[in-house]
Length: 96
Image: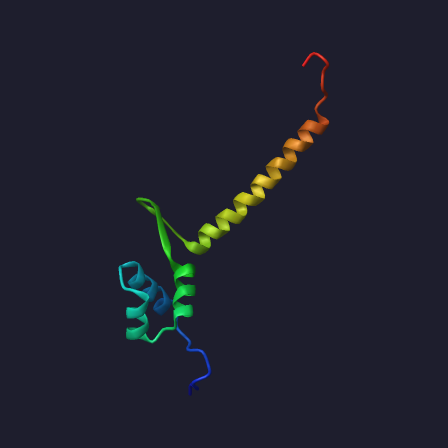
C-alpha cells in the first residue's frame, strides 16, 4: 500500500529505460507527463545513468567518469609528492 507522501520506488531497469528515452530525444516534460516521474528524480537518474560512448566498443556511465576523475586527481597528487621527494633527495651539484 502506497501513500501520497512516500516516494515511489522505481526499479533500476525502469530508471535506465527512462534515461534512454531522454537520451533518444524525449523532453523532460514529455517523460514527466507520460510516466509521472518528478523533475528532480529524472535529473538525478540522468546524472547517474547517462552513458558516454568513448570509442566504438567502450561506453562509460557518469558514475564511472566521476570515479575516474577522482582517481586521476589522486594519481596527480601522488605524482607531485614523488617529484618533490626526488627534488629533496637528489644531490645537487654546483656545476648545474
